Length: 71
View 1: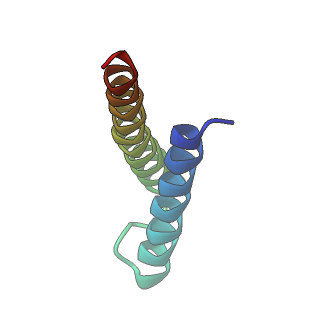
View 2: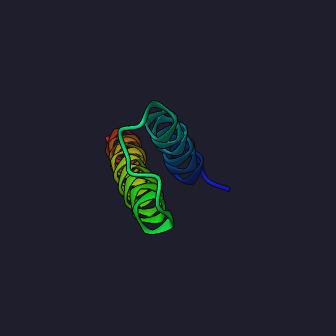
C-alpha cells in the first residue's frame, strides 16, 4: 500500500472516530439513516481529500528529483 493511500485511510479513520464522538454527544440524530450518511460522507470526504493532497506531494517530490537528476 502506498503512502498516500495509508494517509487517506488514516484520515478517514480519524473522521469516523470524530463522527462516533458526535453521535455519542448527541450532535447527529440517532436514526440509522442519519448515522450512515454522516459516517459515509465524513469518511469518504476526508479520506479522498487527504489521499489527494498526499499524492500531489509525492508526485511533486518525484518531479523535483527528476529535475535534479537531469541537471
